[in-house]
Length: 175
Image 1: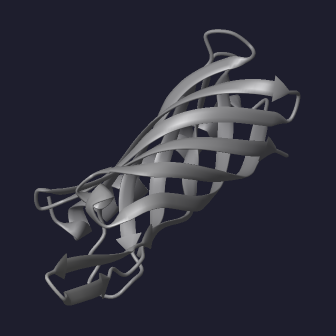
Image 2 (image 1 turned 180 degrees about the vertical axis):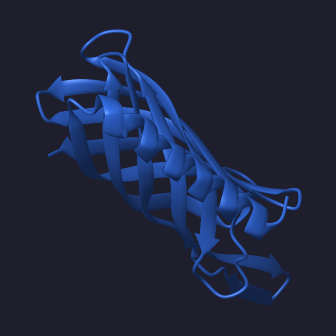
């Protein structure tokens, strides 16, 4: 799927979310937080830790269902690696892998404190040589207080068969 089609699809979902929720909005929330994760798959070959910032706005469609938009910044830190053969040591370093997700978000609330959801969209590559790719992020969250959420998620960015994945733990503050 090409970038234009993905971006158009995300924008269409945003427009749908806004039009649907305009009729039902009885609550909305801005969410800002941080996340830390362990790279998996292809990404684990050159990074061992990822940190990020999450920003989202959700509209309450019903007591059990929210829709919204999500963005942020994710940085998987590149490593320095070395190989030694006899008396010769060769050292190389990998660049950081950086993206800005642009996604539609959905959350279901089986209970007041527990939520399930996903973000789907496009991750825009920031660093040189990074084309970004299709972005999806299933999330499980738990309200640890009235305005603080702890969540676990699986972040996946896919571009032409290359898959960059992160298992993440996040802390969100709701406003």
